[in-house]
Image (spheres, rainbow, N blue to C red):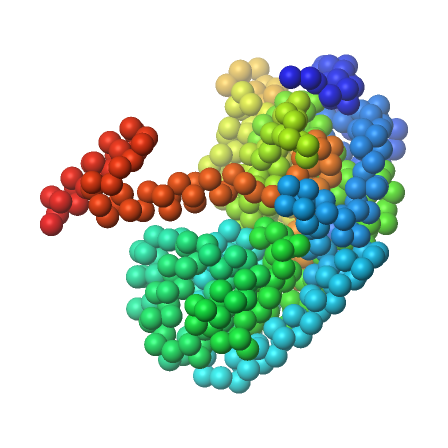
Amino acid sequence: MHTPAWLESLTSHAARMADQGLRDLVHMRSAGVAGETLRVGPILACFARQRIDDQAWAALLAVARDRDMEGAIRALFDGVAVNQSERRPALHMALRSNLGEGAVAQQAHAQAQAARQTLARMIDELRDSKVTDLVNVGIGGSDLGPRLALEALRDLNPGRFRVHFLSTVDAHASEHLLPTLDPSRTAAILVSKSFGTQETQINGARLKQWLGSGDRLYAVSANVAKAQAFGVSPERVLPIWDWVGGRYSLWSSVGFVIAAALGMDVFERMLAGAAQMDAHVRQAPLAENLAVRHGLTAVWNRNAMGYVSQAILPYDERLSRLSAYLQQLVMESLGKSVTHAGAPVGCATGTVIWGGSGTDVQHSFFQELHQGTDTIPMDFIGVVRPDHDQHAAHAALLANLLAQAEGFANGAHPADPQKVHPGNRPSTLFLLDALSPESFGALLALYEHSVFVQATIWGINPFDQWGVELGKVLANGLLPALTDPKALVEDPVTAALLAHIHGKAASRA
């Protein structure tokens, strides 16, 4: 496999810096800590504890220019078919900002605005009804984003609706949920871009039967005809479009339950925060562009340093689901091994995303991060102003955030080898002024754009997800074998496991 020339350049810098520790790098950089800090709206980002010196950063910028990063960002916003395998644009930015030039981008923005007006009308009608509970039925991007947003911004929830989520095909979830609800006071929102997702079809059919009426059944889908055929009235179907990928769809009508629970004003503020980040990414020079800096840092850590994992560590319990959300955004987008042209990519791509909220995780996996044999880069996220008046608790939380980032970077070197912390664990630290709709929207948009920056360097498509489809196709083919023990199955391991399943089922009969 041919190694790209740009990667050889980066690895040579990594080798040159092999003996330089993070503590020394902080003092060696020409612009000091201030030069490693960027601010966009309500977010301050500090990159001072990444193992990148001035020369390495210059090399990363050279790679970005060589890959025409500015042109790629412009093409993304303008509606060029950057999703080449599916021959379509990726215009999730048009759901919240109007920065693209050309007819395609302008039409997308107009469609998004019209859908948002319809969404507002539907929510007003729901608020005037006797409905008290909303059940969001969806999986992946139709579930993870709304769940995260409602937890992150729950302090703004006026309590008009209780919101519940059904994602998995495992019927235990619906069997535990539905007995706690009154069908006459419950509305269900079926969220599926294709309206053919197995999990949504099964849970939607169960809810439709349970509700006993289609009057409280809503849908968000690109396949409006299929939603209507399922039994959702046309006036309760909201569109989504093929230029919005599921993991980028939070800003569309997929956010129905967010807008309903928190209010359209909060939803609009969230979109405004994302739009502010969009404007920065679209307009800022590469060297001052926060998404470019974050994305190039990820490329450096993956390719030059060889790190395979990335921990997401929000020091705010309201963001405890952020790592799960970013798992889909990053790993579904960047888990590719061929270029746009179908050739082997020639280098490592993507990274394993995981994490949890501090200080809880300090007592679970931080031991591995501090003293384990693998180096795992980290994104720390802190919130300066909390939405409570427990000042002592918040001071302790921030003290732990700052202390952990410092400890990972500088380590500790006592005489007892059992207590040695090697340090040199790189991290980026984000400080949000407060966890507001604006800062939340801006943070998620930052990660979206960072993913695109990484994909541009690697020459891969971050907007398709063929790896999600294979298992679904195989599962549909195996369904008959779950009900008919005589059905033929080619794979010998699967056949043996099916025989065990049927044997156990027969023994219970």
